[in-house]
Length: 318
Image 1: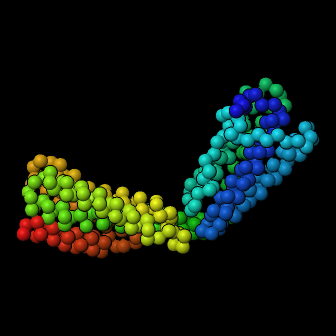
Image 2: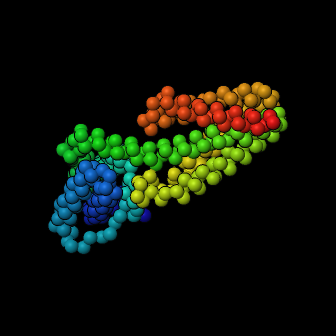
Image 3: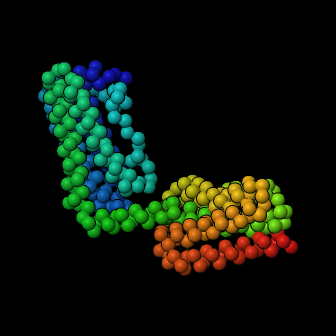
């Protein structure tokens, strides 16, 4: 790798051309990744990709007039300290907010890099070139805002934001909620059955731990194998499975951890309080993200939890 300060004027211009070409392909990748779900934003990135192509043509015309037809291959990874970009455009599905922030950061960082390099350059022609490149990148950032205002109207942006919210619910909230409900409710019966059968905190903790971990593994695999996300848009199976499995385990451990307290009755009272908090949290999540009235959600979850809770106590006490 070469330092940026070691590059010749020809190499700096070649690097700028390569940078513009790569940025164009990145924007094209964003457009393709967003087109099916966020058509208006995809059109914005199509326009930005075309603008990058025009800037590359302008830079290459300047290069050809000064150095001829041969263009050395100099890429970002060949220059020490140059901007490195993670391959977000290859991810599927693309998150709308993440892509917007990534594009803004990409243009801002490129302009800052060129402007910083211009201040340290000794050669006047290189300094002038770097200043021009910085101005071009500033224009790109302004272009993104301009295109956003022209194409992403308030109605279009509101529609895409709502689509993004629904995707978030499908990919994260729904599997997490299913896991939290299963972990919080299904582990109540074995936990409190063990508690009232043994009246020993440590043995009860072991049963609760085994039930929570086992339920987490089971629910994680069940969620991952239920849908590959290709038709429903619910995201990758491993991500949904991980979210569901972790939340199932967390839901079970919440009322299991109090039994680390040696005093059995104190641990049981605390576990009951934790159960009430868990059920309230589940009700709020259903109200907040699933459009379920809070009282209705609380009643449904409360009745189900109470029935499982009583079943565990009756079985353990028999």
